Amino acid sequence: DTGVSQNPRHKITKRGQNVTFRCDPISEHNRLYWYRQTLGQGPEFLTYFQNEAQLEKSRLLSDRFSAERPKGSFSTLEIQRTEQGDSAMYLCASSLGDDEKLFFGSGTQLSVL
Amino acid sequence: DQQVKQNSPSLSVQEGRISILNCDYTNSMFDYFLWYKKYPAEGPTFLISISSIKDKNEDGRFTVFLNKSAKHLSLHIVPSQPGDSAVYFCAASAHNNDMRFGAGTRLTVKP
Image (cartoon, rainbow over all chains, first blue to last red; front, side, top):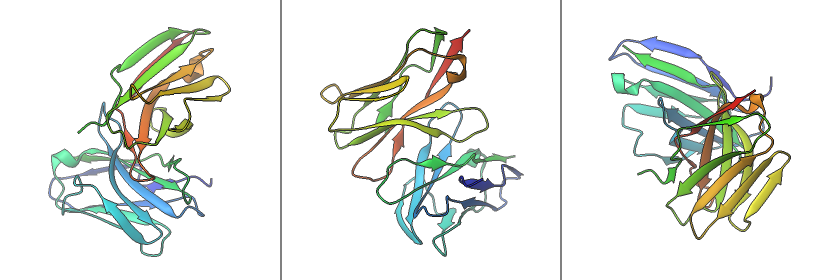
């Protein structure tokens, strides 16, 4: 399968714990995006990378959130001191060059109890 | 601020008829528009797109229309098939910056 891969698919955690999600984009894609989606809403932009550089961050991305893409390949999204309001589907997407079509992974569903 | 709006949360049509999904936007800087389809437990998948220099783009059963003066776009699916049942998201971007999505419309095509 050469699509965007996200792990884990589901994560249940207790409030205050840290969680980390991983995204493996399509191999030749240089752009990588993180989105968050809650029930009844469309995906909300969080941040994006071009190669290893994080070029843009949404104001939705509080200081408890950090994303990395150390070698310009896979990316991780960490949430520290999780809150119940962090419960959502976290989607990763990738694209190539100036192509604006995003290819999405299946997402990581986070539940904070 | 919701710059991309899909005001119909759901739409139900009969198989073989036309489905029309609508989307409005507020940011006049948007220059590229896309429709994504999402099945349960999967991420959104790209369906069709249109640049702001065009007013229509067609791909098989799917056609997207753009009305820049009204800041409105629509997706037409004809004929509709039961396999088209999914949530459809409208998305827009400005100069290849972050993409904004609408809240989605759930399409149900009845056999």
